[in-house]
Length: 116
Image (tube, rainbow, N blue to C red; front, side, top):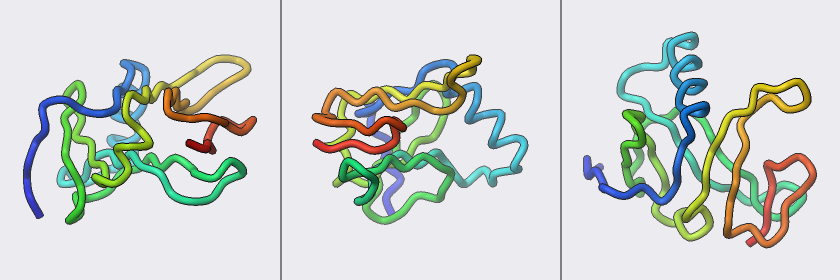
């Protein structure tokens, strides 16, 4: 595995997302060698589902630092996620991570599935 750090990340994390991810990492005692994995997988009602979780770096990953947070992304996923913003909403009607993806041509009602 390479330990390359790319200067410009293809995705962005809002301050709210960083705050919530940091809180979860501390509460769940996520090991220091883990980072945030952002990606896609086949499935969901629109074709692709977003991946957001904690993981170790894998062979085909690129590593980015976003506002002090280590982020891993499979190189093949960048085409689907370029320019995407991950946010965390904490309101009365909506609570959770949201994905604002300019590459999505269609999304489902739950906001976690898309087609490109």
